Length: 132
Image (tube, rainbow, N blue to C red; front, top):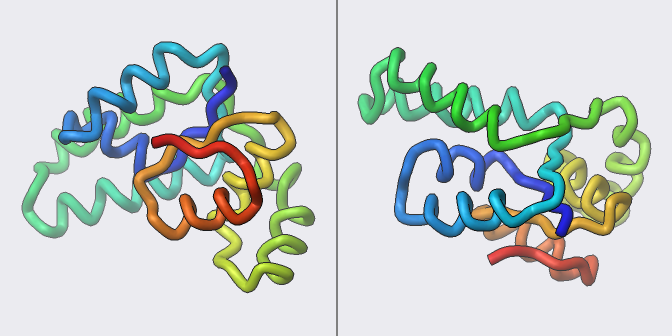
């Protein structure tokens, strides 16, 4: 099974939160784990928020960043997805960031792995598989 991992699930997996066991399980069972290359920026931003809120030290965040990045085997350049993501985001009136993940999943016939409610709803609306 191919998987597109979004930043919310990647951070959860790296943080060892309650969601981490299923993230690790899904990732370990996947034939390939993909993400648009904006995954790097989104994970970094998410971890920065933990540092600013005082939930992680910068050193802990750096370690979690490495862990989150290692979950993804192949990052697809955003330039390869941009036109389709913009088209879909405009048609669906939905944030373009989510469409990068959805478009990649559709192209690859992959399951989207996310903790993001809005992304989950988008993927379901597009009639594609989403986990959990």
